[in-house]
Image (cartoon, rainbow, N blue to C red; front, side, top):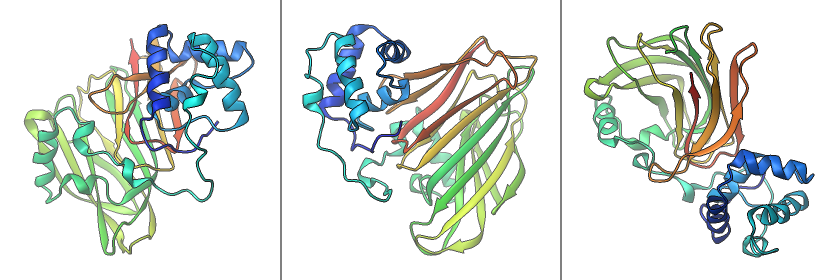
Length: 304
């Protein structure tokens, strides 16, 4: 189910979030109880409602909201009365008033500033050109370390003569530089690192300059140095886009016991668990796909 984009936190989203917190129920618990009432709603949709990213508008969504009020012990119609006016339909347009600054989701923004300066870039360069569509696939090796990443983007230039894209990655440790394994639609240029924080920046030059509004598809792969012992992956979105896909593939000899996707609107707000995934059977892969993702940090965490 895909709802229309909202404009951030609202009276409805705040009231729903407070009711969920009082109930002590997880988003998965709520989704299960809604299914039992034959008014299904996904955990991700509930999450988007409570952050203001979307709101219930369709008849099916409003029916599910009525059931949700009952589950949460909220007076009938109390939450429904707070839903804002229906959003206009039409072609997809980014809502630029919902942009986030880089320091809204980076925990150590000073390291980002330092490493960007080494390629003559600023935080604005992280958000340009606009990433309309983004797919990021991670591979976890037999030691449980992040081995590689494959990034695919459809970008749209904000201004004429757009020539590069910037990619920032923070490693767990940096005994040696990551390596670019391939690139299509672009070519690797400069690499720099802020060694104390293990923060890396990659500059990729587009195959040809883009005029304002022009589209391009780029892909690139990175192989990380040994020792990336992290039990999560995380990707930040600072501007609204059309879709985001995160995929994590585990070596068959090292499969986690539990794995779940999550979303964090700001680094000052709690992480919201979206869905737990079953990956015990081949191909031992979890996918987290979201349409019209609102700005914030999206990720997957696993437990061995």
